Image (cartoon, rainbow, N blue to C red):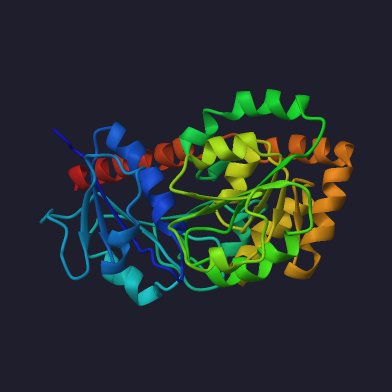
Length: 334
């Protein structure tokens, strides 16, 4: 019997990508394994983005459908930049407690727990944005990293130590619509001698029109991204969740932020020496320069691995579980 319950509210689409959905699913799997009832409430569009990472016991509802549970959830987790203080207040009618996942610190929040896993974020940055009794968890110790990537960390460490030349470059700009960005970015790399592995959600007609040597540019769909990242030597990635996954695999990365909200976390990685930041017009020289300086490459790899330990999901679960246990005890005594 499942004596604890949690509801996740998040969305995914071609504009916002799949980051909010993915990190909620990774958390949700942990709660499923701990025998919680786990439900999701998402927009209709999100149904097209449900990933293979979802545990079989998770229940999804889309659009205007309501979750099947009729009494209050123990806690609700909400993840998305479009939610307002009014939305948070409405969500509190569905659960005894509310947890918000955020990485902007730029608006008002109303919650029992707020989680911002951005590198370098400190709780004081939320001081004027949250209610007085909100428990704020921030920084790399709460990084939400796919356990599957973590399982490769030791193998990655050994591989990076033995790397002497750069041959393979991994490219992934998130789960949204990458077509316009890639049409601009990939031709800028066409004169370089590396093998490029470009990960996409689905096949796109624009690819065959690009002026590329398709013996060196390989387009991959629904592949094992962790394995591809392990086999590659440098990553060109957007500034979302993939940055922490690159870190856990010790993959020196050049970050190409697609949105302003990715800048804070990206700049923190750069300041730690774990990544480089670029615009489209300097991607080729930055990639060439990094590939030619192996000492710099090895330093970046080591610093990337020190940025995250892969235990963030466990820490978040522990905090939420303890909060719910305490809340249940308080409600019982009342």
